[in-house]
Amino acid sequence: MSSTTGSPILETVNLRKSYFMGKVEVPALRGVDIKVEEGEFVSLMGPSGSGKTTLLNMVGMLDVPTSGTVRITGIDTSLLSDVEKSEFRLEKLGFIFQFFNLFMELTAMENVILPMMLQGKGKEEYLRKGEELLKVVGLGERMSHYPSELSGGQQQRVTIARALANEPALLLADEPTANLDSQTSIEIVDLFGRINKKEGKTIFMVTHEEELGRRADRIIRLRDGLVVG
Image (cartoon, rainbow, N blue to C red; front, side, top):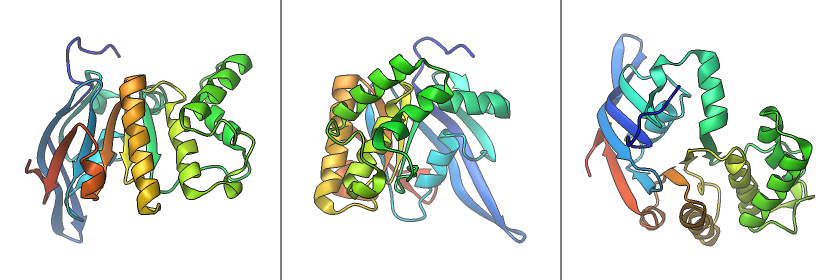
């Protein structure tokens, strides 16, 4: 699975996705062409039903396109087997969702180190990296706290640290502030900005909040399954 030198870190070509309600075809994506270069922080915006989450699901290999191509680090993901897709997600992608998806019985540190344990990294390495990442997201003093002892914003910070654990090539964030108040939402998106600049991480974020979307380097706008700007 070698990547193509000089290619965008994310590229979709004529990407289409349709769902069927009985015999009625409902197009969600109608030929989407986008490129995201390495090191960019890009917001994907559009009204409800425009296809934002569908597009993110195609990029994250959580769903299969009807037709078209998704390339990540130059690799056509449609050519990967299910096992290869799982390995690719673990090694190349970091996911951040609106629902924090933390294990409530694990501490902040334990939630963060779990992906590294699954990758087979040594204990000394994953404990060092877990501590480092929790400090990056501003939770150096909360490592031993359980999710129930953390605010919504703090829980999302744990999720971000966990998404960074395997040093992914691409961070995918689907409405990461939907369950947060406005001030905390700004703090989380500003944290993305710092991670983008200081850590050099490429971030592709879905949001419907104009103020938050504008904090990214660039906005891609969808409407009715098409790129409109």
